[in-house]
Length: 97
Image: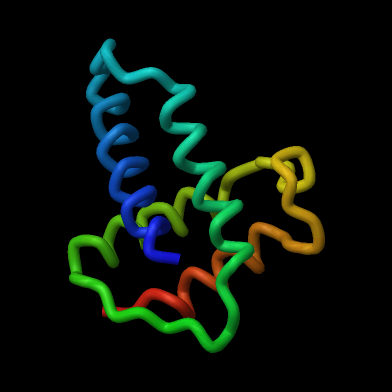
């Protein structure tokens, strides 16, 4: 549960560097962090609510915005019974500023 904000930060940092054409950023690393967030989100329940600093909240919101247009097949990364919408909802409920 506490890994999700860290993974979101890593995803945001690497995505930002990649957008600036930083050749040292491997797309596989970005994808790994993204998929880890999806997997870890399956551990969140409706009762989980964690207050986080604004900058980390912003990273999670950026991830949520990217997830809205992501075409990842959750079943292919081992997540059954959840949709991208479910992931987004769980993240929005669990992490507050």
